Image (cartoon, rainbow, N blue to C red):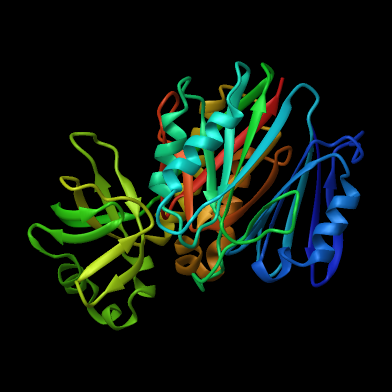
Amino acid sequence: MKISQQHFLKGTWQQHSQTEDFDSSVCQLVFMFGAGTVVTLPEVFNYIRTQYPKADIVSCSTSGEIMDDGVYDDTVSVIAIQFDHTQVRCAKMSVVKGNNSFETGKVLMKELDAEDLVTVFVISEGSFSNGSELVNGLNSNNHKKIPITGGMAGDADRFQKTQVGLNAIPSEGNVVAVGFYGTRLQIGHSSFGGWDEFGRERLITRSDKNVLYEIDGRNALDLYKEYLGPYVNELPGSALFFPLSMRIGDSGKSLVRTILAISEEDKSMTFAGNLPEGSKVRLMKANFDRIINGSSVAAKHALEDEGNKKAPQLAILISCVGRKLILQERTYEEVKAAKDIFGPETAITGFYSYGELSPFNQDSNCELHNQTMTITTFSEI
């Protein structure tokens, strides 16, 4: 595997790094992560298309760009990958607001399926699709339980519209899945939060997919507001500081769910992922040092999952916008924490998202996560 990284910063293209013998004319895959106002510029896409004429170009809008150990806003981070022993195939579908996220995931997975498929990386629009339903659709056609990872596009802290593209200028409503094929690609993945839970565990008594109506028989919004104190007047934005930890059944593992919207009319809350009735939830709050350390934990687990003592050749970091809004000027610390684990030989790219996709561990189904640092590593052997 050979890699080239470029950065579009303040209207100028800069070469960040490039592996010896990298050949842009035969490179197979390019990821382009950038601010929505910049990554959708025709001149940006046309430049990359000219640079890598045979590559599939996968792009999305972000809530911040990651390159090496830095975090940027209003830029475009580009990584081009030339595989030596791996084949790549991409598929794209449009998702309709509110009703076909499951079918989208199901069809994309079926389209990429093959005997030698080893992993799938997904980038979804992030403003209106149901991430849980998308993941459920992907899992329904993942009969071999290969790793599925990725993230949902962002729109800074505006939550208005997101754009995703495949071999075209990114636009609204798209989901792109990238399939990797061959026997010589090693994959690692991990997802970790670092938030503190507080208060007693409560039961979801009424919900409809990702809309929560009642907890312990009480109006969900009224109960939630009791915990917010002075933050109550800043809803729904302040909800990023107080996500919910959700546990389904008797599993000891918890998923984090972030609030996207509230309704004063019916006292409901809409989340980025599903909250099934009968699940148990606890409120969470930020712990700066634990959130930053969570990035190190995710990097260590990804290394263990890959099963290779050497540093990976590539790591894609997808972290939640909520972490960025909380960490603010300390945001770079969580990226640097992962970089310190991987070392200087690993090329790092990624973005801040509206949701992260990753299995909990090896051989388990993909899950939608919120408020986590999710890492996918790639190495060719």
